[in-house]
Length: 150
Image (cartoon, rainbow, N blue to C red):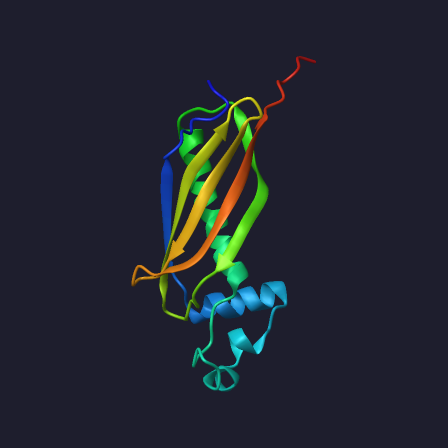
């Protein structure tokens, strides 16, 4: 067993078509009912011309990709519990519209074995290959507590 089965360059991908229901469910769940996301008429007068997805929804998709990386390590037999330490440098570069298909690529860029941490570069692209969001994700691979005999 090992703390983490990850090496620099390892990557996973996650794709999802953003539906109108995703927007409304996310808005209801978070309370973010900004007209940018739920009001066609309001957005018809903007430079975007139509409603856009929540940026935080894209972060949620980034989290899904990190979970897939963790699942890869679990399949290989890690003896740790990976937990997110957070995201840095999140930027929303282009809008994501209803019916866009986004693909998140999560790539391990650094490993600190001593501190049991990884850093990943995260990119989100739309179906046209345009970069719509980026960020960095920190994972801590916490040591599992051994079961004690009672």
